[in-house]
Amino acid sequence: MTDLVQALRTYADVAAEGSFSRVAERSGASHTTIARRIDFLEAHFGARLLHRSTRRLTLTHEGLRLLDHARTVIEAVDNARSELGDRKSARGVVRVGVTTALGLHYAGRLADLRARHPELRIEFAVADWQGELRETGLDLALRVGDPAPESLFAEPLGLIRRSLVATPLYLGQRGTPDGADDLREHECIAYGYGPAPSVWDVGGVQIPATGAFRANSSEAVYRAVTHDLGIGLLPDIQVAEAIAEGRLTRLLPGIAIEPLRLSVVHHFPGRQMPFRVRAVLDFLHRAFPGAGDA
Image (cartoon, rainbow, N blue to C red; front, top):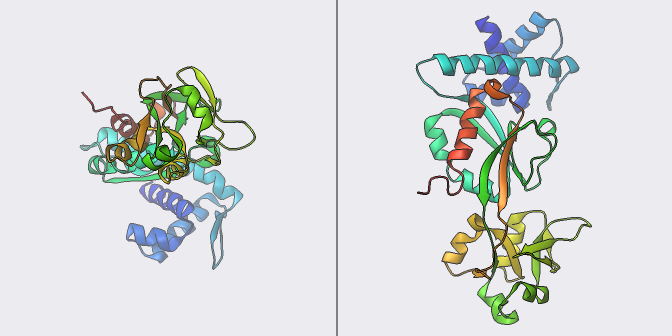
């Protein structure tokens, strides 16, 4: 049984990496050893698992079916080891879909997670618009607003405050707005894409964001704003440093702007969540902006 679990773990790694060589290099085993473990699985289950060529590896239909079972076995073994062993350390790969601003925020705090779980590997899929979990192979994904209907389970993370900002140069050329309605006369750099118009709710006033540029990436909007193109409505965690340094100016600070409501979604009911995923979920809560503030 030990040999079978080890072979299944190797097979899952090969499926993820698409290469015997990369798995061998990462695990410290030889290329021949990796190949023999795959041969063992094909003999054990009586099915061909991989299409092998000199250029790439692809999974057969049977290989795809076995991969789901392999991951289930690996997670069960790892969970038992973590819960029953002397040390509470997670191992394996956890894939997380994160928004741009929060992805950068969390990436700067991964040392804490690494110190707690040195055998854990984290992969971020950074995109402000996330697809469905099952289609993208993610274990966890951040969602802005109400969680998507496909999400079976969701946990609230917290609120992200936003601010209207512009550069001193832009304001010197176009003037500083005194109220929400004044924004109609400015270049409003919107977050969005497609035919639907972008509208900002500024203190209950609906302002069409009709600048010369918009994007479905908060980082692209941030870059455009910091290069004097117009006014942006951006998360505070993205603009706080630039405001402190005087590169951006916060506008209309006395007007309330609805914060972004963040949740994390997953497909694991209750105690069925793998320990490796739970370790990352706890990190997302622990390192959420403002979570450690008194």
